[in-house]
Amino acid sequence: MSSYFPIPPNIWIEELSENIYGSITFLNIPNNQLKNNLFSRKYNDNVYLGVYCIEKFNWELLKVFKCRPNEFIEIKRGELNVNNNRIIVVVPKKNNNFIKKTNKLIKPDSLRIDRSPIAERVSINFHLRESFTSYQGEYPYEMTLLKKSSFLTFDVLKNPSEINNINFLILTNIFQESQMQDDCNIEFFDPYFRKNIKLFKAKRNAYTIKRVYDLEKKIGNEETLFLKSNKFNFIPLMLSINIESKQLSLEHTHPPTEFFYGLKKYEAVKLIKNQWLQDE
Image (cartoon, rainbow, N blue to C red; front, side, top):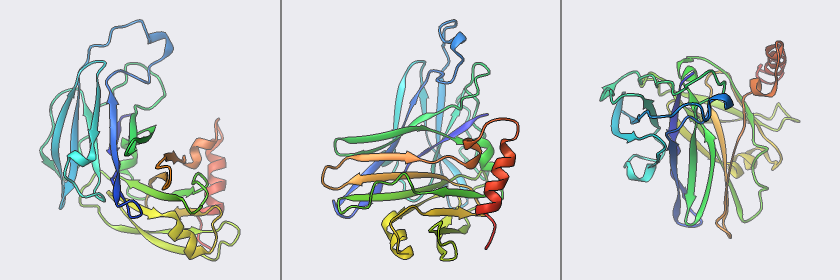
């Protein structure tokens, strides 16, 4: 399985009159190899990172980075001169063979060297002054091919909604075909009062950024909210900032399939989807 690496958006903090800045850090050494191979072979491969963004209805190549073996490269969104809500995708390749303009985002190369089941990942970062937060993440290639899928998550990983804390929900969607830029409704609700459903729009091939307090205010509850869609899938991030200390926190939730293991895991997932994704 191969993966894309989206560069997170810069987020404007009105209370501070400044941005939280997004970036990714790529390390060119296999971080998903089996233990038996960890020291048994010398790694000498260059990796090329093609940076793509949608311009109107095409994926356009912005820049290519060459990453040598055992080298770190940080790609900062602020240095790419692209609006904050537009998706920027880094495509890893084993050779410098990138299409400058295409309506289908080129497939990333797999960087695996063995049969390790762990996905290839980068550090997804946010910076504010001297504060820094990150997690190891990726966007699987297979997810970008799904014309219809479902999405279910909750905001339990937010920091408490105190006066000094701000929580941002960031929904990331990548679709291989650049012309797919349509909207869908995200339903959000208190799980104990499911008939009180509110909506907001999320976009395909884009970032959708929401202040969690605005969602809580519409529901009238600061406890855990559930969010769902029967049309698109998203990778959700929860970015929190303490306005007083300027400290950052970044969390993410997993899809229901990640909560189960074994031959019958999809039977359990089906039960969850029947409970939470079906229309009332």
